[in-house]
Amino acid sequence: MKSCITISLVEEARGGPFVLWDGLEESIRFAGELGFDAVEIFAPSIEALKLDRLGGLLDSAGVKLAALGTGAGWVKHRLQLADADAEKRVQAKAFVRSVIDAAGQFGAMAIIGSMQGRSDDQVDPATARGYLAEALEDGGEHARQYNVPLIYEPLNRYETNQCCTVEDGVKLLQSLNTDNVRLLCDLFHMNIEEADIAQGLLIGDKLVGHVHFVDSNRRPVGYGHMQYVPIIDALREIGYDGYLCAEAFPWPDPHEAARQTMRAYRYWTSRK
Image (cartoon, rainbow, N blue to C red; front, side):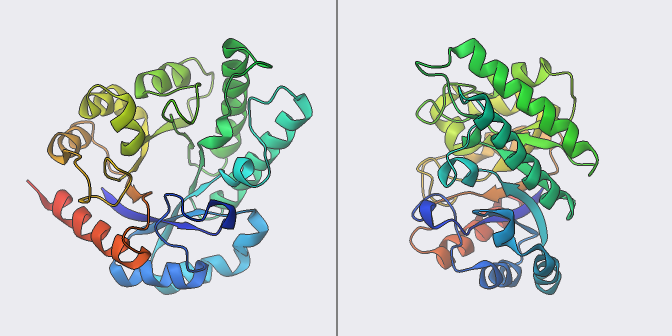
């Protein structure tokens, strides 16, 4: 399993669960100094990433790009994949494709989390789920050209009513025609929704494509009450060799949160 840390460039999300906020160049440099294998970036737009410079920044720091989030599609642009408005759904899928294309240049994945939307008084649950499935089909096949999967994240009940558990996510992915979508298992969301986090990971099995490595209170690992022995054992049992990525509050501050994440990553992945 490899180490990864989140970088946010979205001012509208400041104070949210992303570790590094000090600009792209400084954040990538700091991640490299701490020994992280990769970064996951949450950007307001593809233009803000300045892709012509991003490769050089990553190479200089000795880190890879693990994934790009699509959350700004919702947080900043108010686009979501289950919108009642057909034109808004078209725009949302186009935004997702643009993130897939940007990430794909670096062999990285795109993540669909908050953009999945939800059912409401305008869209019933079955229709909302159908719109989401259609978008995952589209995005999964679009990502195939880059030899990476599209990543879909079940969220807790306070953030979506689409898929809240790993089992729900597995059922959704198994209903698709494409086989190029994987699950993001976020330990914070799982702590709310799963009766047993380790069992949830075992249910996800080979569909687990990315993990958000965080504690029970969404602080960095070690600052909450999460029990990691069964979690790490379950990840090893399913043969997970992807990223453990810190999507956590920058507590007590971004730099110490990053250092604590690396300490925790080294401790838990070295444990026999």
